[in-house]
Length: 225
Image 1 (cartoon, rainbow, N blue to C red):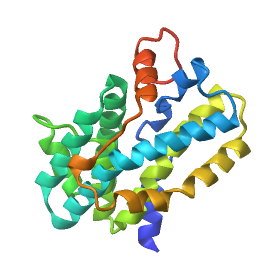
Image 2: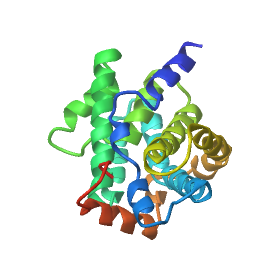
Image 3: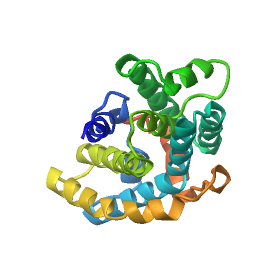
Image 4: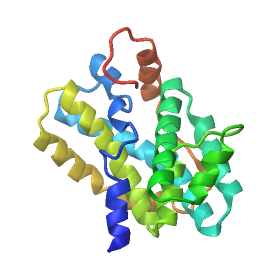
């Protein structure tokens, strides 16, 4: 029961890591007409969560397993794999900023941990990234890797849907219906990636990369990406 409560606390979409500042690419998708109604929004959210699974999700599992083994170097390698695969500057900023905030919050709330040690070693090297930090934190809190992965996927979807409520004509029930439908795919995504290694990480979505690159130079925007 205690582990479940910790999962709910740190996996909450309103946990103060700054997720509300980002749209995970949705803002430019709306501006370009790629997303314009509930159907296209659901398609976009599913694309985002699939990319989250095959990319950051693999690093999260590696970070979780590294924490279970007490292997700080494996955790650092997972952070490096995430950082190097963020082609767009805003996406890198999102991952690093949220990772740093989560590590700082963990140090204050949880205390001494591998994650605190990791952030201390990041000053002159590879930065802490959000998916890896989440995996490490949940491992140290006794949360299983399956539940840690699920929380990460939920967060990726809820970030987009939270932004959608401010960007297009959908209401809260539309957003919850989409979230419910997308959540049905989490177990399938986990089965697809649970044996993957860092070199297997992938995130081929050129349309989203182009939109993210265009957003970086937009003059008017509500979100950082």
